[in-house]
Image 1 (cartoon, each protein chain N blue to C red):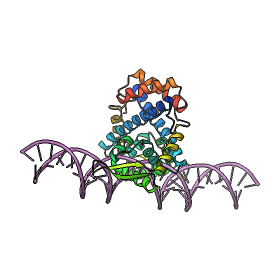
Image 2 (tube, rainbow over the protein chains, first blue to last red):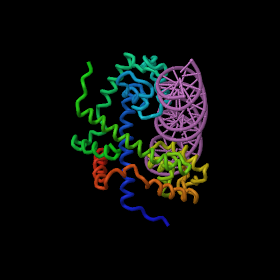
Image 3 (cartoon, chains in turn cyan, brown, blue, orange):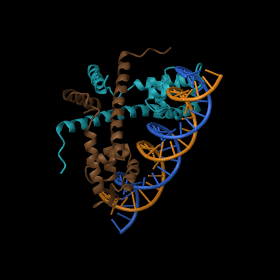
Image 4 (tube, each protein chain N blue to C red):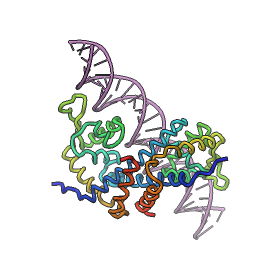
Length: 141
Length: 141
DNA sequence: CTTGAACCATTCAAGCTGCAATTATCATGA
DNA sequence: TCATGATAATTGCAGCTTGAATGGTTCAAG
């Protein structure tokens, strides 16, 4: 009936499971610290990526999600007075996203928190470096 | 003002980005092959994990999601006559999930597809092995 | 037998996400 | 100038996911 899968195939499946497992742990880490600051994970990710003024599309690329998604998330952040949508200086189509002083202050607190107890703490620096190389190669630099 | 982050911190952030990036690529791979079979990614994951009869909770653990989520996903699969909810032989609280013949046939086709063009094909077997070790260590054996 | 704690599945509300269609604006070339 | 195609953001819709109740069931202690 079903041909039993080759060892190589099984190994790849396990590997996929490990990668997604670690990714879930990282996401959980973000979620916890975000919740402690009254943010959802998506809102925290947006805040984290807002290192300076940018457009909606630029933020979407940094968050690797659809622009329509950032519309939703920025709506929430704007309701909390953390972000402002201003007209873009040179392109009337675009919005210029700017952190309010409150938003900037919350962002620094978030970044501080996110560096604490990293999900990768179980790895020695040299192992992290090795992991970095392998992941880059897997993705295709 | 803001103390500039240490190199070690920056390295960990990059690493997190790489892990989630690869995880997204894996998810995309599943999504594509699922769509080709008329399934959503979540439905495909459920089907993939159903290697035999199991309860809702067991499936939730395999999919690493909440039980309420599997209720939703199994609803969809049941509507397509791919899965049946039967009473559990020994525990009247639980449901016994069983693939229909149609579901079993689709599952084998899905597994075949998922092994094609793995997102980890960019890595030599020995590198995959190294990655495996590092990920296990990062997660904590 | 009865009680109470633990457990299974489900429901519901809220939020996340992607895709397609829409509107406004930009930029290019005839 | 003006038409045409590309781009920025938004809206609507459908599906995914979680977390907190809820109702039925099991199990062990009394």
